[in-house]
Amino acid sequence: MTTKTKSIQNFINGNFQNPKSGEWIDNYDPSCGEVYGKIPNSSTVDVEEAVMASAKAFPVWSNTTVDERSKILLKIADGIEAKLQFLAEAESKDNGKPVSLATAVDIPRAASNFRFFGHAITQFASEAHESVGHQTVNFTLKKPLGIVGCISPWNLPLYLFTWKIAPALAAGNCVVAKPSEVTPMTAFLLGEICNEAGLPPGVLNIVHGLGHTTGQAIVQHPQIKAISFTGGTATGEHIARTAAPMFKKLSLELGGKNPNLIFADCDYEKMLDTTVRSSFANQGQICLCGSRIFVEASIYEKFKTDFVARVKALKVGHPSEKESNLGALVSKPHLEKVLSYIEDAHHQNAKILSGGNRVIVPGYEKGYYLEPSVIEVKTNQCKLNQEEIFGPVVTIMPFKTDEEALAMANDVRYGLSATLWTNNLNRTMRFSNELQTGIVWVNTWMMRDLRTPFGGMKDSGVGREGGFEALRFFTEPKNVCIQYS
Ligand code: TXE
Image 1 (spheres, rainbow, N blue to C red):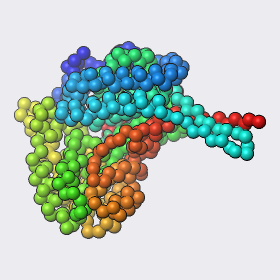
Image 2 (image 1 turned 90 degrees about the horizontal axis):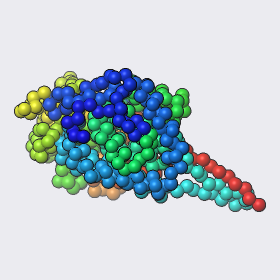
Image 3 (image 1 turned 30 degrees about the horizontal axis):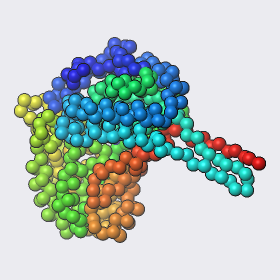
């Protein structure tokens, strides 16, 4: 198998197969804007087959010893690592991200997800409660849910796909999963790695297709007990509406509009380096990117000059070139969406300080390249600060007091993460308590310890992934109360 593979297939019951309808969707290479493959346009029939395969595999998989499950997950991690370069190139071609980024971050992290949950399941203990005086002891069984659905987005394809699948499998569930139709390649390649690692047929089934058909079929299937979803907030709302009346467990990781709060007492150079990354890593297509930058007034002009100079030095280029800091955006519709926000900036009394234009990369003229863009806004209440753009676009504006900074940080519908740059301990503690976000980074960004709870407040979603939180989500706690005499 090579990254030049034209058609990818569904992975059901350990086999690769075409969609029953015989319908296919074009798969684009964002670096050149051309179709380079076909993916199954799966229907309810394919999803049904995947559910049947899962149902058949579940009794054995859920009773497999923790040691055995752990061993298989660790082998999958090894398999991903053994194909690091191959997978990184495939991810880059499918998504437009620099190969260097996929090699350093996406693929190693996908392996870490399997390795982490392979170990975590061996430590997933349950509590016992002795009721003294009643001669009873309670303990909690943690049963796998059965068949679960995992639906992932296009920005960090294999990274987020495995972030859901690994804990689901570790906990003894069987999985019907759908990667984004925009970036399906590495999920397809994972099937072979799972077979090589000895994952029994039917334990993981990967069905490709569109959200409103294939994804919808997964969400509404009565035998699928839980949905773990990462994607847009509007899609999350729709999924919640479908799944709630069926009383499915739901974990929704949705959009973000994260504040990056910069105080004059911070370590300036470290802040500047990290802020360039937290603004534009992965072309700004990470739900954790700090897209609203608020800077204390006393250093605002200096920051503006230094930041813009650093951003102008970033190189946008073909994802395979080592010097490219930014590759292509994921798709034409997404590029157009991001551009529409930039074009609208002048209606909002905002000023483009840097970037704002498409980049034409010689030899790849139809690729979806965009300059990293910095926009100065006058108010937090503008569209640029209130809506998730999800591209290489950040806004900057000054603030005078801690109270003003905190109020603006929280004045948005989203609540995923916040970054705080300060060396003041009292401010750190006050903001950590008051910021309405699921994650607060202080003097760092995107340092991920996989044991920590990951997720957002407000319209950024419900539930937490990561560590034992994920294993709790993918299990049903059952209390057993025994009275003795
Ligand atoms: O995501 P969708 P889109 C944000 C970002 C972006 C916007 C829209 O702002 O511009 O969302 O992106 C599947 N039932 N994020 O439209 O549609 C779909 O096939 C079941 C933030 O590309 O939410 C894909 O697998 N599934 C985000 C997945 O949902 C459905 C990352 C995500 O796609 C479905 C991506 C349905 N009815 C975008 N409809 C983050 N939080 O990191 C779609 N899907």
